[in-house]
Image (spheres, helix red, strand yellow):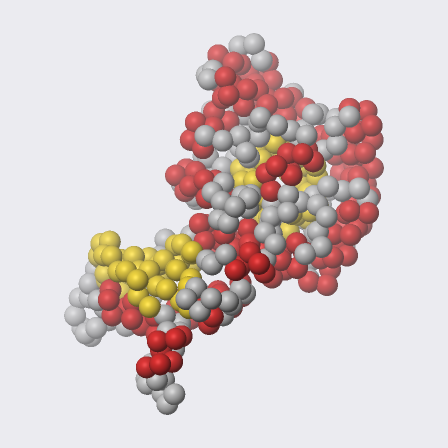
Length: 420
């Protein structure tokens, strides 16, 4: 390990103190300092192990704190809350190539400090030594395309709905119908992993029987992401159950099992890992708390996911379209070489969102999921799948949705149903 290697962490902060002072507090708290000088805190030690301030840039200010609990400079006086961007540099040898210990440094007790009324980690630059420890994506975009045999367009997929409560024999019929529809990808809902009413082993058996039968008839084997989320000692057993049955993808709730759980799974996984980010809103929805997706996706990629949810345009969730577009671009931007992941568009998606997605994102390296947009198509799920493909055909040929729908009835019916 090179002693000069460092991690750069960029923050957006809000504080009633000067930005420079707040940056000093951050650097000290997360390296060699505390609230008071202690024996052993020598200049030599601070030089070797202390965090350094790289830059401080003011953004704006407010008279109202974003978060409660900040300690104003002067009581009974209107405080000014300064907002700025701070870049800190941490010695890599303080924690080494360890995601858990990296996070304790760059995203640890900082959030609790009373000098701050807002603090958000917005970027990370890591030494390549992290890739010596963590395997990163095993399949990524090209491997996923190879398994699904889909090129030059997004993978079209859906989510099993109802997400909870579907009896196994009804699930069988649904998967049969979808697998014969020409769909590329199906995933379990994040709510449904290994419930007592439909244990994973039984669900895998039912689903794979139908997928294999459909493949024998059509020559196309659908990629199905089984939700194997569970305690650490369950992950391998669940993975092995899927692979033994001929499954070709597993899904895991990243925030439920943690980056360490994903990394543990990646070490032995034989199929792509579909990364679901449920609980993400709790980490990021406040604009001055938590972390940006730019940081999150880097950690997920290091840990080893091959696909990562980003939300979609005009979705049912709070994120702006601009944020979704940037999230997709981040997933497609290499960190250390061939380590990009397949972004997954979902939430409120239907055939009509294809043109806007392509025009904004300039890529077909996507999994485009539509739950209701496929399952609730007025002519059935097969027509819903076809309408999604037609929406992307319109996008890729530069046609308008309405013009393309004139000769494509599935798309026309989708517009009737969802276009309002």
